[in-house]
Length: 81
Image 1: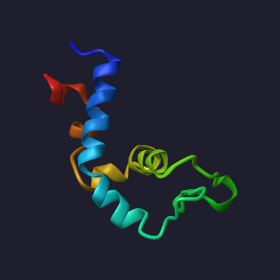
Image 2 (image 1 turned 60 degrees about the vertical axis):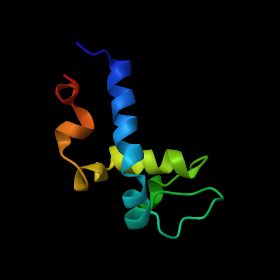
Image 3 (image 1 turned 90 degrees about the vertical axis):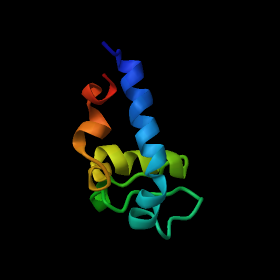
Image 4 (image 1 turned 180 degrees about the horizontal axis):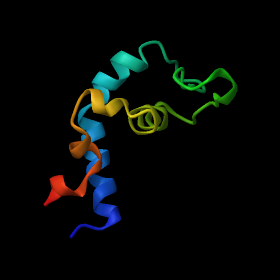
């Protein structure tokens, strides 16, 4: 059985492999200075401290990672067994 830390490590691992696809599709013109999520409603947009945090937000909060892999691969511990 895997604990929450192992699942987070695995999610990070999957997202790292897909970072180029996420960046090219959802962050093509994002600058370094205070990047914001263009997928969030305008009133809820907030600047992120860096592009890595924004990329993870897009991948998991907006579930865009599922466009590049299965839901089980990105969220489930069953893949780890």
